[in-house]
Length: 105
Image (cartoon, rainbow, N blue to C red):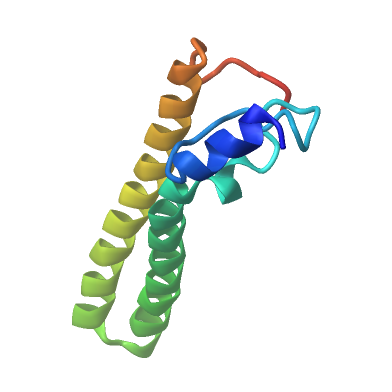
């Protein structure tokens, strides 16, 4: 067993990107592998469901519900995208790069 395999078990919450052992691309699978992105993806999903609810409520004539779902949809979408962007930025800064640097995508 090599030293890198032994280190992985010692620090289970340590994020190591890029995963050079399984890919030649620098950030392939980062979004799924990095569990700190998951709350952002969940909020985006909830925001999309609330957006559909907004359209349904507005089409049915329920103005109050449409307004409530619309506001909640906007908040969830903005927070979800914000969380994902902040996490991507954290990974890039750890590598000494900017968020807009291409890096294999």
